[in-house]
Length: 349
Ligand code: SAH
Ligand code: SF4
Image (cartoon, rainbow, N blue to C red):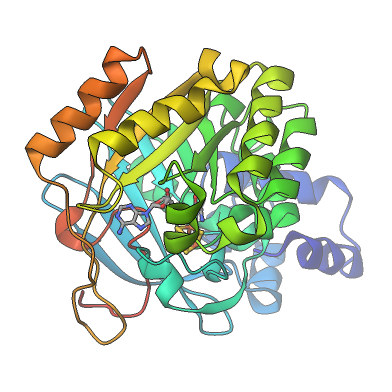
């Protein structure tokens, strides 16, 4: 729901100021799904509001469940744009929602299904937040709750900084959804001014950088944003982020078979990290195995998934050089539910 609009309507109806707070608690904290269920306000007001303002900004269009429990939901915005979100059920009990911040993406990384889609527009704070609410309501019906939110769906969060920030504040609101800041992570392709602004925030939200290549040549090839913000600009700003926040930086490295997964490239990655004191001290390399995606015409794209042996050699080089690393378990492969595979273009893919 658009809260600015709701506030205006309540004023016009001559309602007392505390109504807004009552409604907020009902929807954001108690996860009521419809004006009908907001039983702490008068029946007449519920009926009036139902006529005056849409309860949700997003409409759930379809849902697909993966064998591993991941659920992908496709929503439509009021102006008819398709966006996707995923709920990931981790074995340790975490329930993570991966949200989209834009319909499409301007960055157009060569391996990313969202990028291939082109850019439509940024999402509002409410459109971002409602993706989480939608899964929170579902989980509540199962006796569970959302424990983590990652901004790793469609779009580049730092090209929609203000709305992403507002959505984070909505998630974190003590009198509302009340999700801890440490349970929220934002991933960027490397928008330097965005990282600088993020560093100045007085919060404990986590930052992830999609690095994916240890040299400018290769990075520019697969991530055009590297031409605007090359490694020599990006890395010092990330180092400064770790220095000033003392928070662990997640370095995402998407392994593309035969392209960025050689032993030499693992060593170059070690060297790159080694040049930056703070990143060396407090970071984690998150290895992601490439998920093949289809292009807009339904063809499988040109990248390959790395083989197990190559992967092991890459990981051993990192370990030998005392680089902290993990392998991200990819959920929802059978529903194209991996972050970065959210394309919203085809309900049957
Ligand atoms: N735009 C931001 C956040 C969204 S993408 C960013 O790029 O960081 C979230 C992550 O999914 C990124 O690390 C991205 O590189 C990765 N990703 C994209 N396409 C993928 C694919 N086909 N398989 C696996 N991960 C992919
Ligand atoms: Fe955009 Fe991220 Fe996909 Fe690149 S990987 S096109 S930045 S969503």
